[in-house]
Amino acid sequence: MNFLRVKQAQFALADGRLDEAHSLLSRDSVRSHRHGQRLATKLVKAYVKRGQAHLDEGRLHEALADCDKAGSLGGHQADVAELRGSVVKQMSQKRNDVERRDMKLDAARQHAREGFLSQGVAMLRGVNGESTRVEQAEQELDLHRAKADTAMERGKTALDREDWAAAGHHIAEARRLRPFDRRVDELAGRLSDDATGKAREAMQCGRVDTAQAILRAVAPAAGDDLGVQEMRDAVGQVAKASQAMQRGDARSAGRGLRKVKARLPGADWVDDAIKLADRIIESQDALENGPLGLISDGYASVTHAEPNNAHTASTVANVMTPIAYHYGVNETGGSHGVLPKQFLIQVDGAGSALASCQPVVTVGPVSSPQRPDVGLIADPSAPVVTIQRSQEDYFLRSPQPVKVNGKPTNDKLLSDGDKIELSSRCRFRFRLPHAASTTAVLEMTGSRMVRADVKRVVLLDRQLVIGAGSACHLRAESAEKPVVLNLKDGRLMVQSGQAVKVGVGDYDPQHGLPMDTHVDLGTVSLRVTQA
Image (cartoon, rainbow, N blue to C red; front, side, top):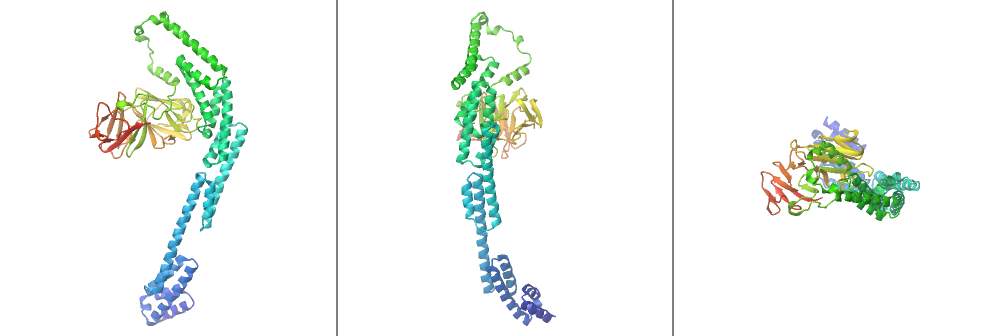
């Protein structure tokens, strides 16, 4: 029987059917036959010869398979080992070539994403290897260039017909695709000049609303253009003057209008408004210096005060001037641990959070003419909303409808977990994590702040809890015990059963936590810095 299998293997080898011969000779009883041993030696040489042919033609996996089969029959023979070494070397070289090619392709795509199309194309010219992937990368670069050219052309067309919203959108898209293209800069410069001119004409005629709409439309493309910024400041001063008049503060309104006059010397309506404000101031001074001013301020009965405190707070909130968006501005001082109205809390392992000590906070696009307390990177046309804390409740108010839990509203009593949507790309969640604390948290779920590392806004009211549980305002998984920070007299006081180290010294409970100093609270480390 073994002799028959040897003869079958001999015929298979003669016909070049090496794998069939290998299958027959793989049995120990056949290979131990004296004719089978000689036939196995011939089969090993045939495998080495065919493996070398595979290697010469670049079929590395087939060559390695022949080496394995030759090794299983003849062991570690010199010619088999030499062939295997050559195959492994070429496979390693090919793998390195593929990795270098992939790195060049990725670098070319990255250059395209950053706007360096020419550099990306130049890198592709030196890429060898799999033509399909190179062609795909070339197609991506061509598509990127075509999108940028289309955006520039559409922006130019919209600019010619003074469609400010479309022009701002398309030019901003072109700048995103080609940030270093001189043509995009020229187009953006023309947009800024034309929009500034039209906004100035509208302001001269008293159409502040038209000027505001133009400036909002071009904001994504105009960026920090000085002309646009100057007109935006003028519109903001008019808005502040209007709100000051609603509060009955004619002096602040007059000061704001005089700033507008400096930017718009030919606007007659500003002169008229200043005169009217001055008349109101004169009338108020006359009343205060007359008999009405002789009565003692403490004589008025408190029973005549507004009975509905919630309504009063609501009215004040609706006309309140949004506080200027400030970073690093200490409005309450900063010595001996006294905090500014806004500051950053950086907790190791939990990231950074913006904390606000104000009962009324405005939230909206950072590019809005009236910059909000919490500025978000969003469409300038999105509204600036007000979140007001009244006793234990929070109210959301907006000049135009915004979505809360998917339903449009202008006024809403907020509850824990409410989803607030200023626009399709500007969303955040309102949270009241701790049942015993009225401190709230705004979690940025679909929007970004100016500082990319800040993901939360803490509306601080007396206590701030840091810990590992979901009931904490700031989650720090490394915390073994919750740490409570109490806001008292403008200072942060520590309430913790663990040792507190401030820098290299000890914690002073009279002065509270200092600014810009590393603080260790047991397993939690934090730093309070300027916003």
